[in-house]
Image 1 (tube, rainbow, N blue to C red):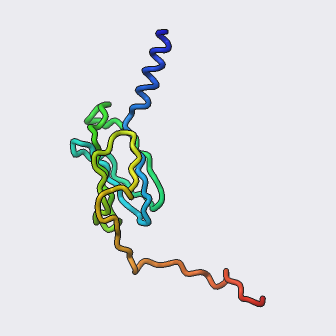
Image 2 (image 1 turned 60 degrees about the horizontal axis):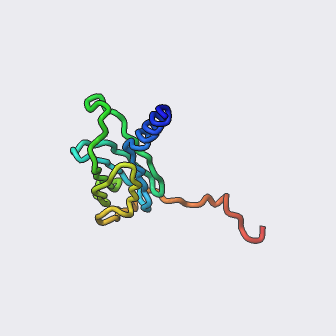
Image 3 (image 1 turned 180 degrees about the vertical axis):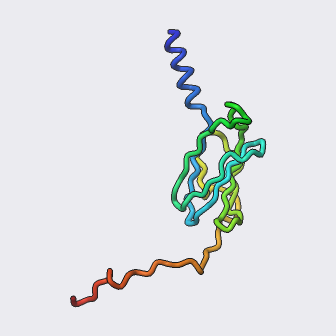
Length: 128
């Protein structure tokens, strides 16, 4: 019985670690900033369009092993630094899609960036 209780406590403690699944389900490359309720930046990461990132709490030397205070705020920004949207009151172990953020949810497209042009050698002519 004692063994079962210890195992149950270990499994429970492993399942309650702070983590967030940050999902960029937008057509834009976005920077994602996770802030704790204290205002501490927990993660600042670029996430490509249609990709995700699993953030797990990592103890910091100045904070010890105490998990960050929730709720979290997740700020999504465009590559040029403009706001895309913000997800507020995010609890631990949640999935956070960019599409559910409040805000404009639009980024400027850089028209000067090179675009894909097919290689003429890759295209076969009709009749060959």
